[in-house]
Image (cartoon, rainbow, N blue to C red; front, side, top):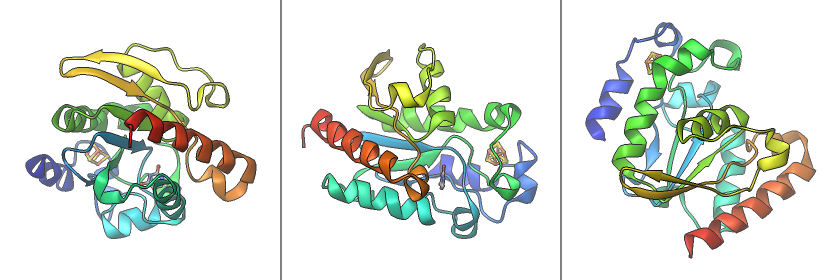
Length: 187
Ligand code: SF4
Ligand code: URA
């Protein structure tokens, strides 16, 4: 994983590599049982080279804390490792160029649970494991079970933590989904 993270830090496979300050490979435990996958780095993530360290990151920390988890207990990364200018959505091409890194991270960590944060991440992860995505308002918190070469995994898509910043009702939904995730982890 260390080698992979180094490779990501010097990657220039897509145009985002020219525009970034720092690539953001991911952070946390390499043998975490649970992996959180966001969309792409924002301003602060690009500045610091770490995932979810801006305002959405504070919400994620709060949600983790409420279910008794610390960042060191989980692995946090994104579909795309370099910041798209102006925080626009990553393009299909950028996702295609970058997602092999995420695939490798999943194979290294072999998590029991993957939690896609937000609909773009949900779309990528569900398709990767053979499911057809539906609107996130309908399937957030739903548990998808998939087989992999390393065994059975559960996928639980949730809203992106940034939505909690402007929609308090969705923050409650996020809280509820995180409590169910804790129950699945059996902690
Ligand atoms: Fe490489 Fe991904 Fe950064 Fe593009 S976004 S340069 S593929 S690490
Ligand atoms: N939003 C994301 O999707 N990822 C981050 O790392 C930060 C904000």
